[in-house]
Length: 521
Image 1 (cartoon, rainbow, N blue to C red):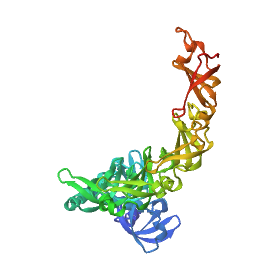
Image 2: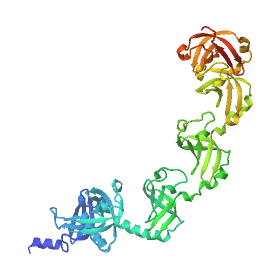
Image 3: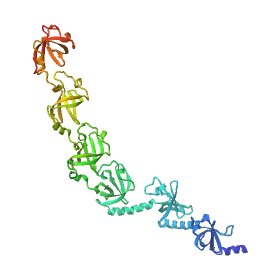
Image 4: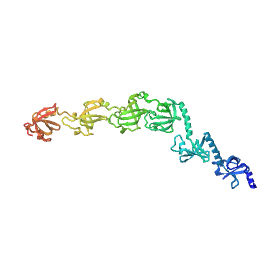
């Protein structure tokens, strides 16, 4: 051995590459740290080989562990590394944890194909997508930077390969929680859980390792269309255990059952005649449903909306969410039905009719509508009177009310009858004047008088002759001179003028009989 070799042997006595040794910080420089590693040797740790930002907190005299990369570099220093020192220690800990099936802490730092990368004490580990959670998350962005406990599934130091799982730990925790929950779960118990999943028919709630179903029908005494109206995933809720099958571990839950059924007290709370305020929740062709309180609804039938309008379309006047005041008509807690009325909050106009009108009274109304049998005259709001076609004229033959009246026309009429309880009132137009058959016609026409008029109708039995406005006489077929084979419809035509002789006047039957025999037409 020459002198140089002997010098190196003495200098680096006890040190070799790949060892981890303790050293004392001698000097902290901008580009690294000089460390006394013993055996008359000084080493240098470049800044790039430090762990994190630890260089900034180091000071002379600090004792640290370092990894010997090379015994001598170009500057005569032993080349050291803090990163490798910590890495070797970490690998040792990971191998021990793997053998002992212990958990390790790690921070999720990135995404790779098929999973995530986890920093476990400076060693990168692979977290497969199927091992992230009990159920593979759709979005892993929110996991970045978070620290969790993991179980090591596989480790290969030579290949620098570590595979970890978070799901294994969660399954173990869930199993322990499940056993604890099973020991305390029973029907009728009030328990707390977390909303795990939403469906159209209900929500699944994690009670602690066991999922229970809260059906939509057990969520509220009121009406809801989807569970999302009351619950969101992640909500912590208190529920009641309705049924629990220990064999299948099937649990059904209730939420509305925490409160008493509101229908048990509705008859006392909502007596007939009481005024209430409610919110429209549904409109139909036959009425509107009003929510009086959670779980209690009432129906306002279309006939109970207004005194005036009898055929209202509810959706035209009401919308879901509208506030409506109504009066209680009838309540049945057993049938869960409440009948309501809006019109009962206002006086019935027909009740006022009895005090406002008397038979024989003259009044003015407006023609509202027509029917084949007469016209309806509006006297007051909500009160229409019938003017029958037979009460329009003493003498005119009226085929349809529109022959003498127009919609919107104001007419003076006489009250003929009042039936307020049946919401009926009848009026007359002809009664506004004297019946001409009583005095006028008998005084004007005498037996034997010759009269002239126009043919207004031809029937098999004779001719109707209009003598003056509305007054007609009948020439019976027997009073017409003709041959036996002649037909009167061929002999005469409507509108032709004709002269005849009065042979009979009967005011009680409103008839004037005429004869053409011995007369020249």
